[in-house]
Image (cartoon, rainbow, N blue to C red; front, side, top):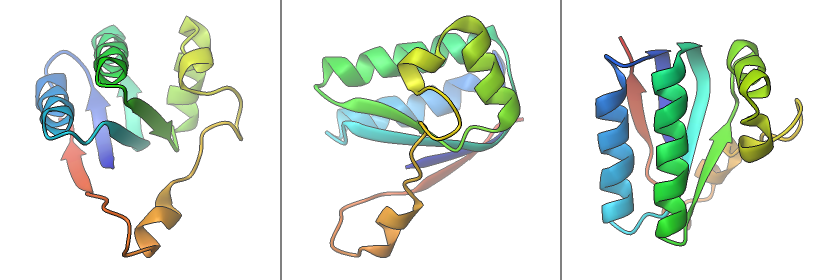
Length: 114
């Protein structure tokens, strides 16, 4: 799980993409992005999420989006990515309970966008 905070744009996206690529390289093909702390995303951020989604698919994995802020949820709907990352307020799963089960091999990272 990667928790993302701040603004996702062309200046801040590279470290996030590197974290996703690193996870996929380490055979962690189930990526969860918690976007509850993201207050802005531009087209570069959207392109990066699509890139990450396709990269996970190539590894027979998935990229899950959880807890998008209302602004980001609206952005996904506006550009049609809501059908890729989930539809409606209840379609984005909440994975926070997974960390309560110590038997699951989950790794959590925090990424602050500037």
